Image (cartoon, rainbow, N blue to C red; front, top):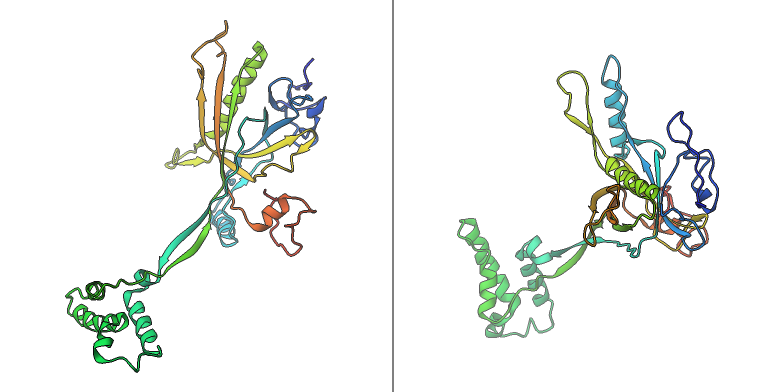
Length: 338
């Protein structure tokens, strides 16, 4: 007996009218959709961990009759409020698959090296050296010979000559390096690490399908086809000269790692994602097929990328109200991410 009992109705598309068993949590009151499920016993006591994919389609703005002013104003309002995302539907499809063998979550930040010497100019270093030399206790006691061998004095002298040479386009900027090199010195690049931002999280999920029945083989084919369909853009066809000039971007995916009747609080939590890559291997262990032509095994690899960056507030909210990282002063209202 199947773990999930779904009864589809013929009107209004495939709708969820009855759900029984452990996967009754598939939001029967909100999505009203029949989920595609693999394997058939997903949600049983031995398969109570699973991945839920909720699919949201992008909704292009409706044409404005008479004038483009309203459409332009809507686009301008979104841009000026830092809202660059289009409108999307509620979930138009749900896919539930078993928990894969590997599950990695990576967090990447971007830092750049900045050299005070090279990026701000070697004159900065020479000036710093002069200041250090003049303010040192021994500066007033140095003899002329000692002064000439001090790297700060060498840099200052070379800077003066180099500036003069540069004035006549004679390439004097390297003179400071050369003068110091002859005396066995080199300018400290004075590296600093500058934070540039955080990247969008990426993750990959791998699934191996081995159907045990003909119905299960058909479900697998539907699952792969659904991912392919929502991965692809839609060509916007209109009348007139602009026909075929624009795409409606592919759908968004919300990926949740479920346990029994709810989201697993110990696993990563992602916001809306785009599906950046699909790889389907119909012969992962050599090609073999059933009598109806369905592959004996199919491997599906899905690569996702979030559409919003991770902030402290999102990570804190992802651990729930009792999290030690949660803060009551956060103004970030986006759904919590772990």
